[in-house]
Amino acid sequence: MRKTVEWIKGKRIIIGSVALIAVISGGGTYLATKNYYQNLLADAHPIFVAHSPYALLHPILGISVPGDQFNDGFPDVRSGIQSIVSAEPQGTLTRYSVYLRELDSGHWTGINEHEPFDPASLLKVVVAIAAYKQAEIRPSFLVTPLVYTKDLAQVNAQLPFAQPAELAVGQSYTVPYLVKKELSDSDNSAVYTLLSAIDPQTLDSVYDDLSIPRPNATDSEGYKLTAFEYSRFFRILYLGTLDLAWADSEQILENLSQSTFTTGLVAGVPSTVTVAHKFGEHVTGPSDVELSDCGIVYAPGKPYFLCVMTEGNDQASLANVIAQISRFVYQKMNAQASS
Image (cartoon, rainbow, N blue to C red; front, side, top):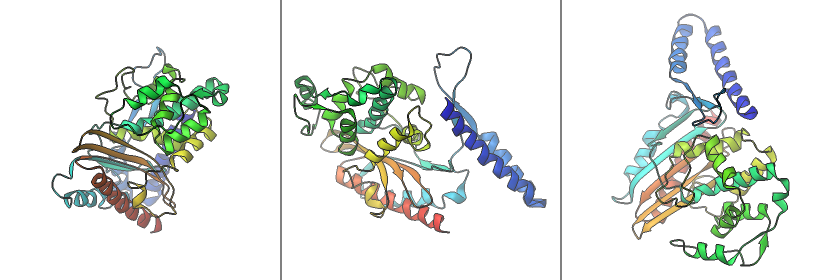
C-alpha cells in the first residue's frame, strides 16, 4: 500500500495549502473561507478496502470528496451536458451517465455517475493491469509465448456480434503484443489468450484492491459497473498508485492512447491532444445498444478523466452524443486552464 499512502499524502498537501490560504486571507474572508472548508472537510470521508482479509489493519484507498463542492472548477458543465442530451431526437438516448474528474486536483462532477451499465470491453483494461501484475510476480511471463488455440477461437466465435479474430490459430504471441491488441484494437482473441494464462487470483485482486465487485468467473452476464467506479482503474494508472512498475502503467496508457476507436471522446478534442481511453459496446438487439467511452484527456495544463456511458437505439448516434459531450467538456476545461 506504499503508493496509495503517497496518494493520500498528496491529498493532505492540497488540504494543507488551502488552510494556509485561509489563514493569510484575514478578516471576513478568513471566516468565510474557514467555514467553507470546515463544511467541505466534514463531508469528506475515507474510502476503505472492502472485505479486507487482514485482522489488524484497515487499508485505505483514498479520500472521497463530494461532487460539485468546487463549482468554480466546473462552470455550467452539468447544465451544458444536459442541453446536449435534450437536443437529441426522442428515443436516441434512453439513459446516460457522465463522470468528470480533474486528475491533479481531484475536483469532480457528474450526472447519473452511479447509474450501472454493462462495461463490455471496458474490462479489457482490467485484464491488461492483471497481466502486468502477474509479470511483477513472475517476470518471465512477459516473454512467455502464448498460443491462440482452436478452443479459444471457438469461444471467440460464439460471442454475440463477434468480430473476426485478428490472431491466427496455432500462432504464439508475446504478452505485451496481446495487451496492445486488446487495448488499441479491442481484439477479443487477444483478451481470451491473455485470460487463458493469467492466474484468476491475480485478476480478482485488481477488483479487490479497488473495492470494485468482480464479475462472475464463469458467467459475467448481467455484470454492471458505474462511471464513478470505473474511473478508479484509470486513476491508479495515472497516479502511479498501483502495485506496478511505473513503466508498466505508462505502457498501458500508451496502448490506450493508440485506440482505433475515434468516434467518441477522441472526436471531441483537437487531433494534437492525447486521449488514453477504452470504449465498450453491449448490443442485445438491433435497437438496444449500450456504448461507453472512458479515459484520460491530456488537455494542456489540466489533464482530466471523462467517462460517458450511454444507452439508445443506434451505435453511431450514441458515439455522436459522446463526441459532443467530449467537445463541450474540453472547451470548458481548456478555457479554464488558459484563464
